[in-house]
Image (tube, rainbow, N blue to C red; front, side, top):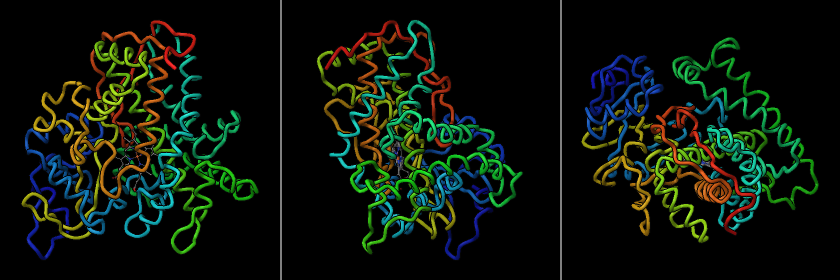
Length: 454
Ligand code: HEM
């Protein structure tokens, strides 16, 4: 692609880029942000499963949905495939020490420190909180009027992650922590703002788009630092089992703890990565099942019998067809071979979760919502990747899947959902996620006073 080739510094070796649209950069960036799925579908139709796009002068991305290339990226040398540098757009929000933004030994150190709170045993403990929170929120749903599920899903997942991360149960303190975080999230939800941030420098002063954005996130920073300071001063912190207390007592191989600045960035990462994504995945699941009455019926039946196999298949199929995170990005510090092209240093290579999950050779009748395809079958490691893969695979994948199961079971047990008559909701970009454009609207025919199944 000629437009991309000119933007990257020439290498001494003969490098090349896969073809891609020759659209001017701002138009391409606008389409990528505003019509994300149509843009990707168009590119794939015109150029095949591996193509090049250019969003800004500095940001050339080779997007791929070729399973062999995706395996190559996920299993390749992490020093040659920098995820931290690839995720640089998240830096103003998460901070430079976020595990999502680090590479090399620093990333591994941080990841090891953060893994224990997400192990299986702990998950059961969070289950009680998840059930209690979901029960309370669902009980407040209106009956016989249509409403978007997403705000309710966000309230549930925010409360769950705040309680899991900070171990705070007090409603007033939860509100004090939650309100500035919600403001910060809403600040990242505007497509125009994101587009502006993509197109302007982050080095500018307080009146620039970045300056105003930083002012919006300052109150969230304040509450997170307050909580860290309070916990450090709390003599009972060693006995607590919330994620913040576990991170405070974590030591790396040299016996070093996380600093306050590191803790802030990791907590922000967990709060943001852990809440918005799961809420969106839940909203998509509801959006899908109310449009498939046969699926809804089977789910209710299974719920009555106390099973969960079909529910798990429904969750997998939703994450296949409506992946919340549409792709991951790796930045190349040196030339890298991809499908007959030696990509130049400085380029980004991006496995497209969205396009991979729609390959007809992997998923027959790929656009149809068919949870049955996952019954009794585990998806291939490099074929179903809603949580990414390799050493950067999502730290909270089990947490998210567990929470989805609990929240959806609670909904199915309490609320009789009505099948929707309207067309499927289009995909809309919110920050780096793909969300249902109308928030996953649902209508409850009746509420049962207590869960139908134990
Ligand atoms: C349905 C919900 C979720 C989805 C779809 C999702 C998706 C992803 C994806 C695709 C990545 C890989 C990014 C990359 O390779 O560059 C990732 C990484 C990550 N996720 Fe999630 N995530 C979800 C829920 C969660 C939850 C609940 C948490 C924490 C409580 C979490 C924490 C993280 C962290 C810390 C990383 C960085 C891992 C690393 O770089 O080593 N995520 N997530």
